Image (cartoon, rainbow, N blue to C red; front, side, top):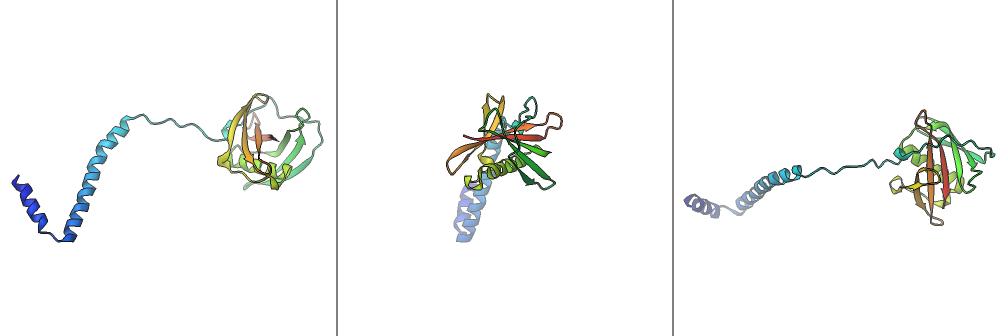
Length: 183
């Protein structure tokens, strides 16, 4: 008890700046001491499992890249950092509301390439006035008629869903084509 009384007597004789410095140092020490049990409790808790949120990961493989007897509607150029890709646009004869875009050469399977190709498909097929969408706003949904996941974004003018169904080349794992539609 006597050491505590000596400390209190010494502390009361200190100037204001000494009291503030000593008080702040005490708070830092207290925080450090409290963090040790918290770290032990958190390490005992299980780590949450993360899932792959890559949209390019969901690229499906159709039995084959669609062969189309339709006449080519248009072509547009995708200028990628490492190469230029020609996109050939066709209307799907079985689903006239859908367009098929064949790439020459194939796109590397990355989120950035899929986003860039999708945005350019929207602008070149349906017009730039349809708006802009962001990669992080993508939603995947299973399309039973296609047997795989489509990536959809909400677009404006008017507000609708723009959906993309990437088709990969089974040999190279790159994106060979896109099936696109607005609903």
